Image 1 (cartoon, rainbow, N blue to C red):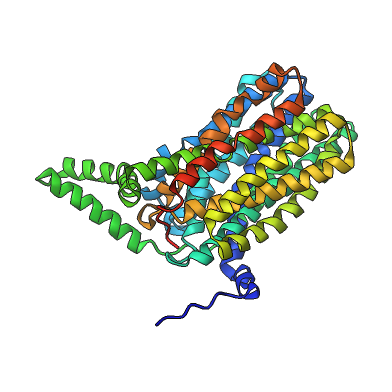
Image 2: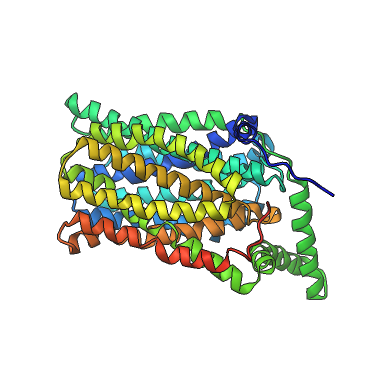
Amino acid sequence: MNIYKKQSLSETFSMYFDMRMLKILLLGAISGFPWVIIGSSLSLWLKEDGLSRSTIGWAGLIFAVYAFNYLWAPIIDRVRIPWLTNKVGHRRSWIVIMQTIILLSLVCWSFMNPVANLTLVISVGLIIAIASATQDITVDALRIEQIGENEGSAMQAGAAMAVVGWWTGYKLGGVIALNTAEFFQISGIENYWQFTFLILGIVVIACNIGLMFVREPQPLDREKKQTETDKMIENKLGFSNIITKIIAWLTGTVIGPVLSFFKKNGFSIALAILGFVFLFKIGEAFLGRMSVIFYKEIGFTKADIALYSKGLGWLTTVIFTLLGGLFAIRSGVIKAMFLSGILMASTNLLFSLLAWSGKSELLFAIAVIFDDMAAAFATVAFVAFISLLVDRTYTATQYALLASIGTAGRTTLAASSGALVDWLNGDWGIFFIITAIMVIPSLVFLYMIKDRLKLND
């Protein structure tokens, strides 16, 4: 008879001190930082140059590329970059290329005026978003591959560290961006955002240096299974030549990950999973897309936003992400998903209170703390959930597919957030109540499938 002894709290917490977690933390930061550039920084740049809420909201459609990066994820999973792959590895070489594109785009922004060249500014923002979304494919794969396939608890701890890293890149990157812009503005520099983007380019360079310290596992087993799939498809074609080999490779690369996902879960459960993933964080996205604009409209300065939303928010997020990881490990990822969904809906209502009460630093701090607490729980549970669903033969593609579907809900629908505020005649309180209601449909999907999920735990 096997007796299972549950880990003590200290034993569970000790997972965070595994050296692999530090590397996952760095990968998360690399993934989160570009969102500062095309999120808070771009939004405030456009706002302070006199563009409307609706324009800023629709500019957020550039985030939609994150919803479609699964389309080219199979290429990232299998294509090796000449010379660079041999030097730094398959996954890391793709990250370096994308980081270089982001750096060059920031340099381009430093020469632009959004009022005179809005289309060009948004186009460069789109390039950053595409590079960032492509980078995320391989960052997530490299992060998952740091952990053994059946180390369920370690995977959930890794998910927590990835979220901490992502928010570190996003929040502290925001602190750097906002304070730098404020400093240049106070110093009397007219194009203060353009100079700020050059400083953000230095951060990108630092991320590339840090990436070289992340070990990349040898992909021999993954490549063997992918080759076996190609041969199976080629055999079904009935004959072998260069044409059939190309067809088999393309089919295995593009169709293989999707077939694997539906075969593992069953058609109906797979569809329900996709529905849940699509809907889960829509309300958070609506709030997040307009939050900086809301803060500015009720009277907070860039320094205030940097302190409360970015600095204080980062500390809160780190603490509650780690606690969320512990909760997911000890109670299970499904319970963590339900709890985080309820928390997200509840904390959005605090912003309604702030909207109706007017500028209040105390209420601002409370709303930010609780919102970041809910977002931390939700994100770590969500990352762990989809990480435990993927097949290691197609790590990058399946994770990208699931993450992209989640992003599709957040980006495509949330692009109308500014228009919704305008339609409500600037009634921010009602807007935040609507965002709270948006989480309910996803929890219904999760309840329907919770007992039939197959997780690599």
